[in-house]
Length: 223
Image (cartoon, rainbow, N blue to C red; front, side, top):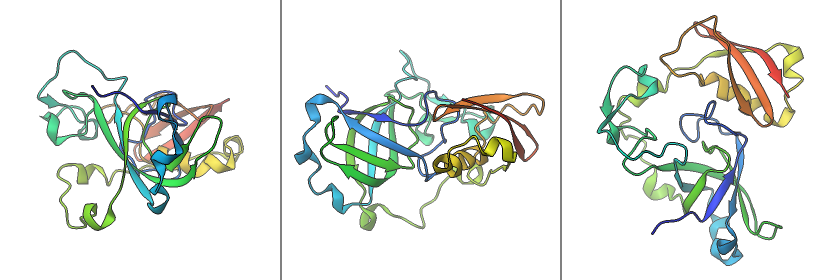
């Protein structure tokens, strides 16, 4: 039986706004906090020698009793079906996710036991984690690998406009991460209404924005 060993603490209380893949927004900071049974510093011995880790986790908000062999990837506009195993859709036979994150710090002795601080993770706050494994660059880095239909979607980026007044509301340490999230276009690809105001929560802020063509304008930030 597989069960969580940890949960992540991230700046995303909800699904909307989370980058569509790990590593797209490198400045997002999160913490992997182990469950009491696994709070043993010895379990992390040697991990300090690695720069990145694979995080194996559960799509806890996407559980279903049934599955479909095809899904509609959002980055293809939500109107074209692809095989589920050719995508990273959360709607899978087993709701398991895989993310690559950079280790920024390992704290072995805290009131919550050992904590792994990471950057670039694409997980919602509270996501259950099944396992953590070191990334092996001499084996797992393949520069000439093909990226399929996802390569075209990776080129999509928006120009972000934020007034100086709203920019001052965002803590300095979180500005770069938030701007990168907005550049990646948090909207579902099938929604393209320039009059619609969208919103999502990030690090105790509610970010309101609208888009017109390739321009994303932040209209309000609520604390």
